Image (cartoon, rainbow, N blue to C red; front, side):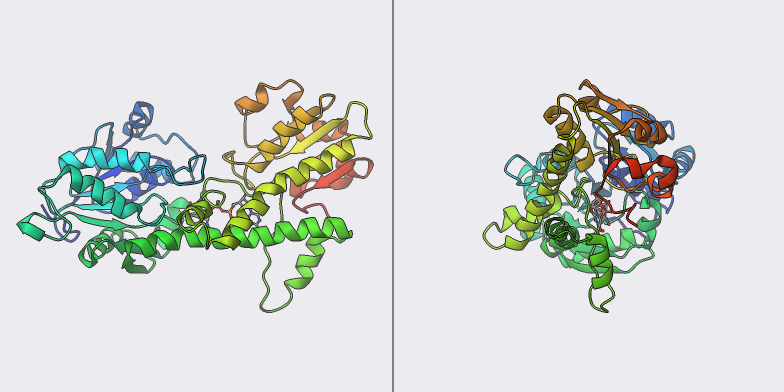
Length: 423
Ligand code: SAJ
C-alpha cells in the first residue's frame, strides 16, 4: 500500500526509541499516524507501553502518555509491517573514527522481510555520506523482488534521509519549529517524506538528495565544532600571554562581523564531538581544518588537567572541589563529557588528592568515578569550604548565581574553565 498522508492514517514504525526516535514517534502519533515504536530493549518497550519515558526530556512524557492512552502509539521489540519506517538508531564511531553502521544494518534487516512494495523508509540517524544508499542497497539485496525505481516491473520502495537537528532539552519545541532537510534517493521519495513531516513540522521543509542531506547535518555540527575550537585555541594562547580570554572575545565580538564562541574544558555530548569525524573519515586528505578542530577540542581537557596538576604541586594533600560533570549547563547528560574525563584523570595523576564533585543534576557518581577512592559527591558550599583548589568545569546556573564572597573564593586557588566568575 502506498502511504498517503492525506488519506487514512498511515502506519508508521519508528525503529529506535531513544532521544530522537521516541519524541518523533510521539509527535507523529499525535498528528494523525498510527505509530508502532520498535526497540531492542524490552525495558524501553514496556516503559513506552505504560506511557512512560525512560530519560529526561521536557514535555515528552505527557505526549507519550497521551498517545498511548488514545491507542495511537504502542511499542514492540520486533519490526512490524508498516507504510512508513523511520530509522532513528545510534551511529557511534569505531576506533578508527569511521562510522559504525551496524545499528542501521540491523534495522534494515528487520524492515526487509516486511516490505510489500510502495513503502517509504526514512533514515533519521546522523550518518556519514552514503549511509542512506547503503541502507537501501542492503534492503534491496535481501529483497530482489523490489526496486528503487520500478525497473524490471518490480514494485518500488522509497528511501530518504531526514536528519534530526533538535537540541536536547528543547526537543518537543524544535521538532515542530525547526526547518527540516529531506533528501531522497529519488525525487518521489523526498516528496513522500516531506508529506509525512508536514503533518507536524511548522518550519520549512527543504528537498534535496540523500547525500547532500547527510552532509548538511554533519556540516552544521562541524561548523560549531570548528568555531568552538577557535575559542579553545584562543584560551590556550591567552593563558600563555597572560590575557583574559573572555575579555578578549567580548571585545572582538563588538565588531559587527565577528561572533566568537566560548572556550571551555573541551567539547562533549554525542553530536558535536562525534559527527565531524564522519566527514574526516569520508575525505581524510581534504578535511584538514575539520580534523584539526576536533584535535584542538579533544586536547583541551589535557590542558585543564595539566594546569590543576601544576597548581596542586604546592599542597601536600590537595583537596579539589570539581564543579560540574555534565557536558553542558543545566542538564543531567554526562555522555562524552570532558568534565568527567578530567575528574577521573586528576584522581589518577594526584594520588594524594581528595576530589569533591558537585553535580546538582545527579544523585550518584557515574560508575568509573564511584569506583575510584578519594572521589565523592558533595554540595557546593561544603565542597568549596574545604577545598584548596576550586575547579569550575560546567557553567550550571547554580554556580553562576553563587555568591563568590559567601563561598570564600578569594582564599582559594580558582581555575574557572568557563569564565563565569571573572571580575
Ligand atoms: N560548547 C562550548 N562553547 C560554546 C558552545 C558549546 O564549549 O560556545 C560546548 C558545550 O559545553 C558542549 C558542546 O560544546 O560540551 C556541545 O554543546 P551544544 O549546546 O553546542 O550542542 P549539542 O551537542 O547539545 O547539540 C548539537 C546542536 N547542533 C548545533 O547547534 C549545530 C543540535 O541542534 C543538534 O541537533 C545536536 O547537536 C545533534 O543531535 O546533532
